Length: 286
Image 1: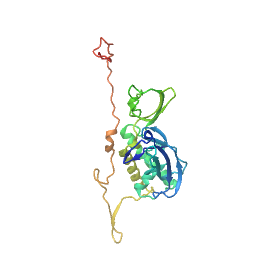
Image 2: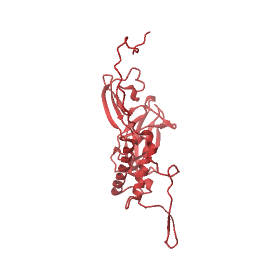
Image 3: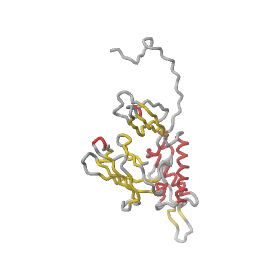
């Protein structure tokens, strides 16, 4: 499955309320978008501004896509050619072997052995992030059935605060479906979504690439970067790597500190006496 957010006029746009539709997704084997390898459509609307495609069965690799949609009823179709997919999705990783290969300068497509080595490097770098943040970087999908939104929450169903769902973590609404009795089935994403965080994706991608570059026999392995070699090969000087904070330097774990899980112990509050004996009431006098 691939969740797509239409772009129209340089902004995220939801065509269905205006009578439009997200009609098709076409996959190509190169950025020139000439050879079609698969297609899917129409998309299913998950929530405001998000549409889901069932992807065709294609080999693992990087694909360039074109998504066609009509902005409104009677309008001319629009083609979005800014979509690029590294398949398969749903591996529980925040980045892809293709992204790491491009960082290394390794040409695509990857061999099965290269893909396996890069997947291992990604898992190692991602494990370092998980250990530092003290939390998983892949959220959990939780479904609740027969929910009714809070009073006044019908106009913002994509907001997690509109639903009676409590969790001691970050919560996002992934999708909602109306039932015949007027209630909803709601899919919640519970936890930190590292794949949607650019800083986490950059850290894992660059460190996975660097670990392979320095691993003997690794994908794109070059060892230390050589700056110059003497005419007779009797001396070699190595390029100095940029220090932390300089342009081109590898990101450090400290750059992810704002997303660390903070540990705290809630204080037990005394039971409040019922109104009118308490100083507070949930009801206001008119």
